[in-house]
Length: 124
Image (cartoon, rainbow, N blue to C red):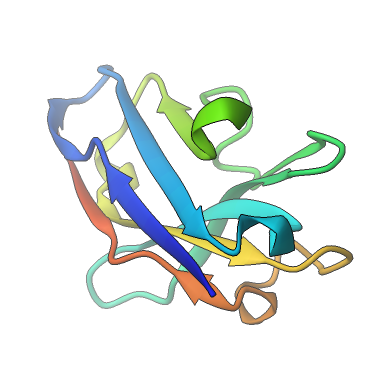
């Protein structure tokens, strides 16, 4: 089993930036990809970005492209989500999740371990 712990959420004004972190521990050899999802109040949880642990290939939702960057620190088994030019519609709980190798990284049901989430609030 893989344990995931997110950090870095908070309150920021529109146009600002935040960097989220997700530290993985446990059976990290089983990680195919680490991804970020978000869930706004009253809405479904949606894919934001993912990073393939073997190839470092990155995947982004249309809303994240050009503003968000997913990256990794191998030594720390940590993935980051740098979020720039934040908008009020980015307000959500952001979750880190792990998927096995070969999964469809855009689909949340492919992910089998989840963190507890971190709140991001963007004020206008």
